[in-house]
Image 1 (cartoon, rainbow, N blue to C red):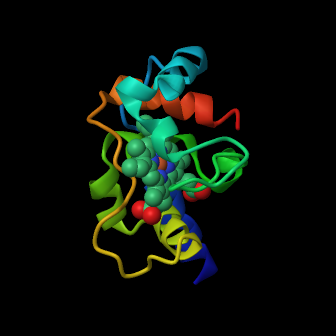
Image 2: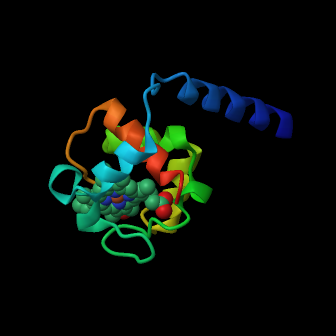
Length: 123
Ligand code: HEC
């Protein structure tokens, strides 16, 4: 049983990391994260404090880079997917049965999302 779960998670991670997030860059991601007008991240998040959304501090310990990039590019699809990281997030914000996420950045390209995810992996 443990082996099967291990195999399934390995397959799951392999699928995520096969996504085309090649040109990522933490510095570009930091600038995007801090650009309140363009990405709105700072409207709902801070590093070191909870606002509308969870505290960003320690986020790299809770999530993989691949999940973060997906979460930023396609919030509602990720929310509905109920992958293990999303289930964990739902539990931590006590929204296990909520159909919609309150995480609503404006539409971003996969490359922008990947850059922001690279930046978040430093937090
Ligand atoms: C309108 C408010 C809002 C905006 C804008 C927003 N978020 Fe969120 N975010 C949330 C909420 C609320 C959650 C928690 C999930 C939920 O309740 O749906 C969340 C969850 C997250 C998480 C998971 C945190 C954890 O501890 O697991 C990350 C990472 C994140 N957001 C990053 C971002 C980034 C990066 C941006 C900008 C591109 C952004 N968010 C824009 C509200 C927002």
